[in-house]
Length: 432
Image (cartoon, rainbow, N blue to C red; front, top):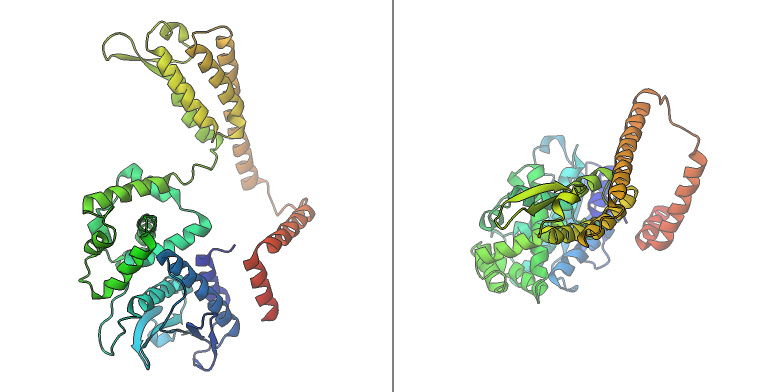
């Protein structure tokens, strides 16, 4: 499945741009009839028609709502005129109409189509319509967007459903202990910050929104918060305390729950295996033992092979058992080339924990040699490939072109057979 963030960029990057003079008769309506898209370029318009419904479906899922719109959302797409180059690439407005109101998204495609951030603008529009559908708007009055962290959280969660969470961001936050205070985070203005900070804030917002919607009745409570936001005084903590009294009784409690959820997101990549180097780095600390040498707190560090020195110590059995358990846990993620290494070390630790030493020294010597050989050979292979790529390769190697072509065709055929979105896009391509 193509990630929707990428679809939004591709829609604006690859499709031909509409003419400077926008003909509003060129219109297409979405499946729910809530969205009307005006654009002279038909393929572009049809892609947006499909995309808006997917984005809206994600937002409604986050709020636990079904289809029930009352105000239309109108999207106009045109080429940015040179005289208006300084204007925003996209604007979202509430417009009074008869009856009620409508949400207007004006998109101007300039030199950098990615600046539009179409997915975010659609999320803003859907949340605006949801928040104001009961209270309505009057011409000339100021309206208030949904909280920025709800908008970015909806965008971030939609992308995580497709690509999975970027665990590295959360791991770095926890490693450096740079988590911002919650009150400061909720009152930020991310539009005034750089792209890197906005990406980080989006990840944090997705984590917060996921935490809120995971509570009992969480989606409905978040929906009430969005509806109450236009009439509130702009104090997010007060609304969070009202709608989520269990985890947001005070700022410190919510901060604690948020931090715990960040730790859960940081562990989202544990299903991925380790490289040879990463496996060796995590193995090395398990091959040294820190054991008390007497009745006091003094400890001494021993190499695993020095078992004649530490086995007489009373605390060695517990330390050996602990390292044995950690070694078993490491083996679940270890690189396949290091599995024989871990198996031998695990057997040696098990024997030593039972006080048996027969054959242990030979086993440790053999596994140490194998471990060094694997690391050296992997390093030599990487060096050779880098050298060959830099000095010997003149042009592309065609030896495997036939095989690769066949493999791609089979893979593409299987993907189309099992992917309804791929089939839908193929049908659109053939039709238009």
